[in-house]
Image 1 (tube, rainbow, N blue to C red):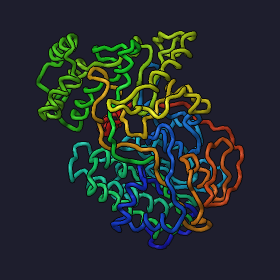
Image 2: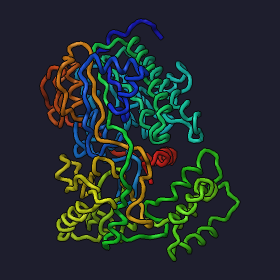
Image 3: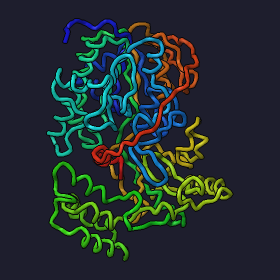
Image 4: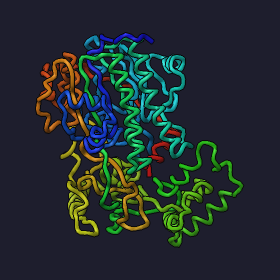
Length: 544
């Protein structure tokens, strides 16, 4: 690799998953991340309001397309076909990312680790997909992953699932280094005018080690080292730092809408292994990477399944078994030794076809109506639909925590929240937790409220900072929104925003106007169908 500055790069975007002032400010004060601090302090910076829902698979596509989920079509980690689900991928993002628009204007890009970009689209430059991609993702151009590994050595999308403790943090640091080294190799090789490199571990460390400031600092220091080297090597004219959402402690409660709806006769449940289970994912998480499991146990799953299902039929579900085991510190021990089918057999779940309304995926932040003609086993007629949606808005708006606080700060029909051709992919009723301090869960069978399953999780406000050539560092960025990032990046490149974008150019840079781009042909949607990706999402609590 060349050691001279790469001066062709006009704009560099650094993506910090879950980056926010509440996390960064203490690191700035400690002098732990001087390169990130320099960008923030030398440029215009402000909190960046995220979208609904503020989670990686929907928020990053919104950031790099500049449109709301109703226009790009991704509302969470999962895509649904009736009651069946799969993990989302790039074919589910039905809007042009900003590097496509740059390509349209003859400008090249290198994109490393952007979530939901697998399989990659062809552009002038290079794309190495990030989160929701398989471990050995297809890259653009074809064969690029082998080239990267030949150049820098090991390159992975995820840390090994059997790593734990300090070893896991060391893996996070190695993954961060891989991103930086791959990005620098590709910018040297392709000489792009635009660069985008995203660091996911700034989010992951909170899910795996909530409240551990030492591990958080170690990850951010690793990121900062890579940022410093990239800045020195690439010498971009303008730098944009942006995040998809924030991160913080949850001090409220866990609320379980499906249990609440069951008490009102809207949710039916089953223990026959259909639907989306709860405790069985604990076993799933332990049954990977060579650990004892479905094919490695000496027990007879059929016999055990019958026994656990029998207990479930009289109310002893695996959630209740898990709660009892957790109380004496044995939940993980038992989960590592129980076949998935056994846990699933005793796991009380939403019976989707028999229910009138349910929360199918907590990341979506909403309740879905089981509508006739839309869902394969729909039980709610068209004539009942509007009334049921309005009733759900009223019911959920009135829910209070055990200490008398509202669970939701907003409950609304989806058309009031989203716009665009894919609004119908959203839940029918959107539920926004109060200050993102109330944790939502789809579980049923063990009460409406509990302590949050995760003590740290996503918050609304991330961060944006813009520094460099042509940037007004004193510009007021208050009110900056996630949708503003894409048109702002394009403006730093002298490229007009798409007229379909929901965001506007932030006042730190001069606007270039808008234009109508050719219709986007996203092609056929493809299945992800990757159990390893699903298991990793379950590890982080994204799949219950």
